[in-house]
Length: 382
Image (cartoon, rainbow, N blue to C red; front, side, top):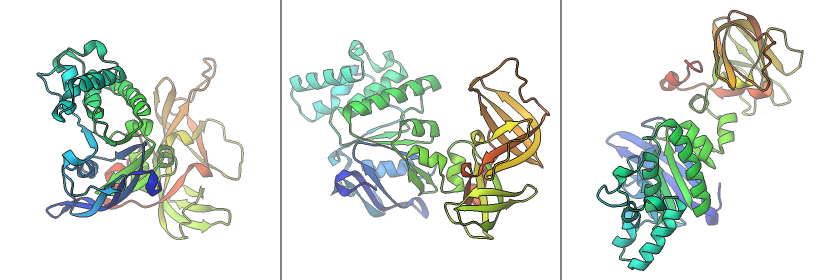
């Protein structure tokens, strides 16, 4: 957790109810100064409500929010040094790009020369100088988003709040805008709080991700921590694809490993960093890319788990191939990267009998999910 001096936003026990429904339920988080911090989760998880409370558009029922150590919980939006970018851009259609960007300074009563200088600086930052005289209807969606960013940044906020800012753009434009957002962040250096339901956006842009579910934060960490070491079945299912196996811990070994019995599949070796006790019901989460697949049996290794099954489906995707392997009625998704592809080498084919195997370190035991999260825990790609 960042120290007080390094903290941009401190959220302390914040709760927001709408009637009897807790949209945000006793949430606490520390956001470091200058980082890109993403609130990630499905629709209705509370991420936008939390952002709106930081912006001042909603008031928490409990808890408080601090900005650079100052309690801003009860401050109106116009007295908070934060600016928000919305999904629909909210540009003034009758104004030019230049006038849209400079609007905040004009309202603040800044001198004309200062406004022109600051707008020129923003136009240079977003590379829109050639479009300064155009109206929003004359520029593309990506350009509108850049104008919205410039308009938000020109008042020099301490924090920029971005609420699903790329949701209205097509896939290629979203990918390009992610790079531009990253470059803009590097240039201005302020804190970005980014709200999204898109795991790809959060993983590629963020320094830190908080995964939200049903009004609570399930896990906070760097993108690689969230992906490689999920702390709950919900996080494992929501971030990327995974295979779930249900079973019980049957032995806890001395070297941080455990044995887990999966019905019909038998016993497998699993890294047990959580020290889950013998007899506990658990899920084993295995990402598709952690598996290896071959028609030949793998070499023996004390920490390698091996299963044998039949290939049911194959999807060739250029950089990799996705296989679905049936093992005693378990449908296992396996991804094989194409580091080298040899045309004269016979690939694994449909209906082949194959071995799939993985190292014990590559699976994570997780306490079993809540029943109301069950819809997330389906086979990858289904």
